[in-house]
Image (cartoon, rainbow, N blue to C red):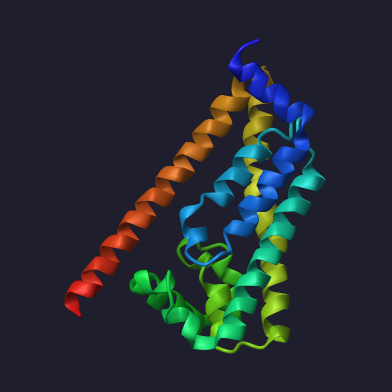
Amino acid sequence: MSDLNQLISFVSLHAAFAYAAIFLAAFLEAIPILGSLIPGSTVILALSALIPAGNLQLTPVLACAIAGAVIGEALAYSIGYVSQREILTSWPMSKYPAVMAQSEEFFHRYGTFAVFFARFVPPVRALVPVVAGALGMPPWRFYPASIAACLLWAPAHALPGILAGTAAERWGMKIEHYGVPLVGSIIAIGTIAVAIHYWRSSRNAAVSRGIQ
């Protein structure tokens, strides 16, 4: 059996690992700075492409993505709420002043709606929860917006993967043939996008330090 078939078979027989990866990807995306470096949304989209073939089930995929996102944002918010503004100038946030300034501006401009919309905006997704806590947003305003966003974010990222997998199945392609190339391509594109964003953030931070 080829390595390709072995990987597909592994996912089929050990779907729990895929569900765990989806939970972890969604969770890490809400962690300050780290979430900006990990293509969590891309992982969820890619693994969702395996749903039409029956390798993964829709309900667990959505449940793991939603749970990971909600818990991750809750943790980030709690850290900010306890630490207050001190966390915004601490490592590693202090290394990315441009991104932090963008996140604070986003939060001040949209208030509670910033928590909701940030879940769909990669540059600030990993920072707005901690910023919201650090700037004193009360829990009764943060959690409803955060949970509502996560409930919409998970299916919004799973659906494109499902459509891609469904299209491949209708074209007569078998999961053994399209699974790894499709999933790998999606993850590669997401990784490149994250790398470009990280490079631009680093460059902006260097420029800001040079100006100061």
